[in-house]
Length: 105
Image (tube, rainbow, N blue to C red; front, side):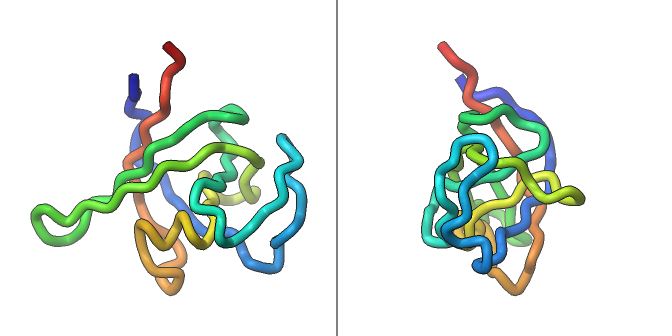
């Protein structure tokens, strides 16, 4: 089951962090990892579905991520470059997404 969490801001992690271990899991960061998420509010291991609605009817982008690290101090969610680019361009820097969390069965 997916539970809506609400609207949140998503940014992307800088490539200079590549290879550094996640604080929660030790998993090394890779900008190419399409599921890498860092969060200050969601528990380690949480699976999140991120949905971005476009400016035109029917424009919807979706990405799935797993929380493996804590986020930067001023940000809510930080994703890998690969995850972020499923929802927007790196030049945008920050996008608003509707977040759903996977509840355990």
